[in-house]
Image 1: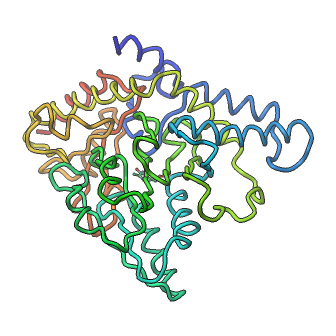
Image 2: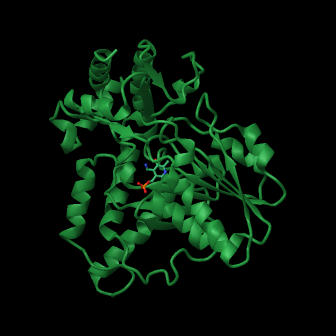
Image 3: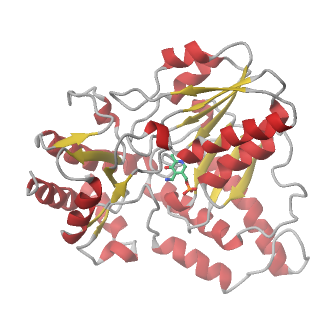
Length: 390
Ligand code: PMP
């Protein structure tokens, strides 16, 4: 019984546990934190806080061990089959992770005349760094061609056929997104490897999947995977890049020259432990069930249009594959106004252009995004509030 499983888990999130409203429905922006994460932060800061990678006294050693141990923890969480041949680099979030790949890793991979494939309609954190890298390379006399992979209008995911048409013999790199931050679609990324072959480097933005659904770098067969720690229950200012093999330059020259976010690392280790103990597969089933309640309810109200949703809600429709994100528009009320009304009714949602780059976005929308602490009552309450605006 999933509901009996979920109730005590929700109780572990102090910011929502004893609160009926407002309901927090913006976990795709950042997630709330369980006591285990808060306790780990307090324990670290009140016992062994020191700098990492330098110093030889016990607190410094403990902090170094924490950082190194958390790299291994991240690998295990991502199902890394060859942890001795991969590396984990901590960042402030997915945006910095993607930018780090674009700046410090991509140039070493590319020669004059090479091509890369990047998303067209995804989060701008997974668009802009690649174009920036192209311009930087051009200034060094290395001209690369950037090809864009669109999202399909009906479902929001990628079309492997479209990918096959833009991949060529000079394609060296593909940047893709695992779960779309607006459409909630699972983007078919397990199909990318079969299309591009073994030699193309695949970089996956897993900001909306890690912590929400099982993510296995082995199954996905990617070379780089970037995620947000803070969307996976760790502190703000956390994230990581996982890189297969020891190819490529060190991300930060000098390695230990900077002071890492040790508190964030402590929170990330605790968050991954918490997620594993709760069961990411069950979290996925829970948020999928809630998302289904919402999409089914919206489908019965003609005033609303669900984005990235095929017109039918058949069992095999893309909507059914939604994990934790449902985005919609009202046909007569602006997203901003709708967001304002919903807050006055007790719901915190995202209501704007959703961080999509200007060219690919048509209008603003309202996004409801869920995590383990959300409830069916919140979905029913939200539908009741939305129904009043029909
Ligand atoms: N990629 C995707 C798909 C996202 O949803 C987000 C966050 N909205 C980001 C990247 C950026 O993540 P961060 O806030 O950790 O920089």
